Every structure is written in structure tokens, then in C-alpha cells.
Length: 427
Image 1 (cartoon, helix red, strand yellow):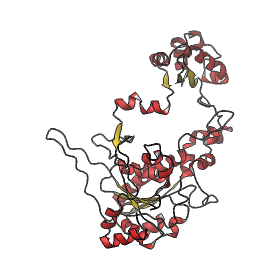
Image 2 (cartoon, helix red, strand yellow):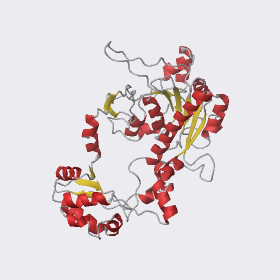
Image 3 (tube, helix red, strand yellow):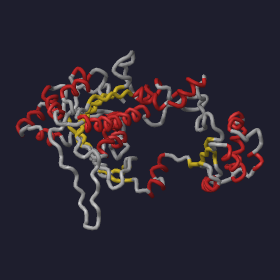
Image 4 (tube, helix red, strand yellow):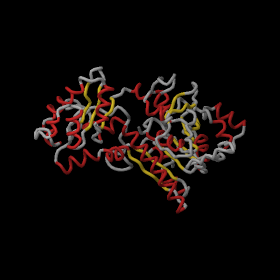
């Protein structure tokens, strides 16, 4: 989500000091852990909601120091979305571990100057202010990179810097609609939004990869440069299959719920114990195995009414009825065992609580605990696995938890900090 309500004077900070690289203690028999790839990189982010925070969390996980600039009066508004995480907001906990929180009023020139001092020493700046707000502060990517040639500066917006939609508010569901995602998600009767903030996540991950690319370029050229990310353009890129199907095939793919628009059988089917098992037959060889080993109807493998994917898709209802009839006599475990033995791709349709207890995640040791203002919270390791390293997975910060340390780092005295607190410039 692009920040629509952050004060227009919000800006990005640059860190005025750099921490020493993390050192992992080792025994004589254990090899030293490899350094994380972004150790020594400092990121300043003026961010709220999901798109920018999720991007910078990826950088923090890989060892970067991330300074999160927040408003003193409540901070990132995602802190108030819910209280599901033991009193903290689930969005905020997910997207903001491993960061330092600087609570400063950027409408006050003194607060803005603190951020400018931080920017002077940072490597990366990320912002998702409302369109035009950063430019009015001189904190847009182009302006900052002109002043700091080694800086990588990222502007995340809803629709991009130009064009007729540039100034529109851009919340995740709105962008999902504009990008066409909603039109291809749901049932034939009802389009639905994605159950996760797909536009925010798409923009975040392109911002993350854009930063890595720009840092790599800086390593060879000595110059950083602007990076521009649009939520709309990020999500439309993810719409590649429906777009090409429509542009070149002439018709948009139908909404089919859990089924696949052009493959059959490919759906979730109820089992005798009330669960649902999804299976996917990708080619006609697999269909013949399914017919023989799961449906126990080997003649269907060569029956012209079902032998090809085109035929099965044309008779989708009949195909699904055959599969549902067979799986409906088995428990989910029995169905999965038989499908696996037949070499048919399959999965259990899990709810979110079941995902949290997923045996594969547990077996691979993907869970950690991170600190927070309410105590330890479970958190997943990032999907990028770099053997020989351990991601940071740092604490979720309280609002303004690091304000005083950061003010001291830019040279503020006790008396100056006291005045800033008295005047409400920092919290």
C-alpha cells in the first residue's frame, strides 16, 4: 500500500554511523559462519503499511541495518491494523522485524534535519509516500541521488510518477482491481480479491530485487541511482498468463475457483473424512496412471472422451465427477498416499492454522522466535537460504525504541534531545 496519510514532510533518513559487522562466536571445531551479503549496508526508510516495509524487511534479514522513520503520533499506521499478535498488529509484526524505529516529526524542520543527517551516510533509501510528497521535501529519488551519487534511492508508488493515474490513492485491493487480478480470481459467479496483499507484495519484492541490482551496479561503477517501482506495473507483470491468453488467444481465461482454466482434472475434491485434496494432471500419461491406479478405471485412460486434456476440459463436469467419486470413498491420507504412489501431483487443502503446523516447515527448521514489545513471537525464516549463514530475524521494534540512540549518533546532546522531546519533535 502506498502511504496516503503520512505527513507530506516525511522524508528518509541516512545513517550517520555504521555498526560493526556481526561476529558469530565459534568453537575451534566449527567453521566460522559466512557473513550475510548485506552486512555493512545501511538503509533508511520512510515507510508505512506493507509495500515498503516488506521490501526493507528482506534487506534486514540479509544483514542490512534498516532505520525505519515513523511519525511520533502513532507511527506506521499498520501498527494499528489489529491486535492479533498478542496485542501487536499482525501486518506490522510480519513486515518490520529487525529494524530500528526513529519516531520523528518530519513537518518540523528540526526533525527533517535529523533525517537529512542520517541520509548523508546511508547506502539505500526507500519511501512510499503519497505521490509528490517526497519531491516537495526534496526527498525523491532523483533529487537525492543527484546530491549523493552513491545512494540507491527507491520510490514506490501506486501507479508510477506520470500518467493519468499518478495522483490516485493506491491501496492494495484497488490495485488488484486495476491490474485485473480480481477479474481472474474467484468463481464463475463472483470475482474476489486475493486473500493476501498481492499488489503490495509484488511491489515489495521488485523493490527488494531492484535494490540488490542497484547495489551490484554501484560495486562496479561507484554510483547508485534511482529505482522506481509501481504497484500496478509489478502486479500486471504477475498477470502474464491471463494477459497473454487474452491478448493472443482472444478471450480472457474463465474464473474457475480452485480449478484450472485450461487443465482438467485440476481441482480440490472432498474426501470421506471431510477434508479436501487437490490434484493436478498435467499430461495425458498422468491421466492414464490416474485412471488405472486411483480411479481403478483403466479403460478411461484411452477413452476418446477423456484421453486428451482438450477432451477432459470440454467434459470438465464429467471428469470432475469421476475423480470426486473415487476420492470421496477415501480419507485424505489414503487419497494422498494413493496419488503419490501413482505419481500424481497432489496436496492437502490446508487452513492457515494447519499451515502454521506444517510438517515440512517443522522438519526443515524454518521457524524462529523474534523479540518484540510483548515478548517472543514465532517468525518464519526468509525463503532465501544461503548455506553457511543465519538470517538476522531481528526484533520487532517499539515505536521510537531507537530514537535516542540515533539522535546521539548524529551529534545531538542531552539538552538538545530534551528540547526535541519537549516540543514533540521526537518520541
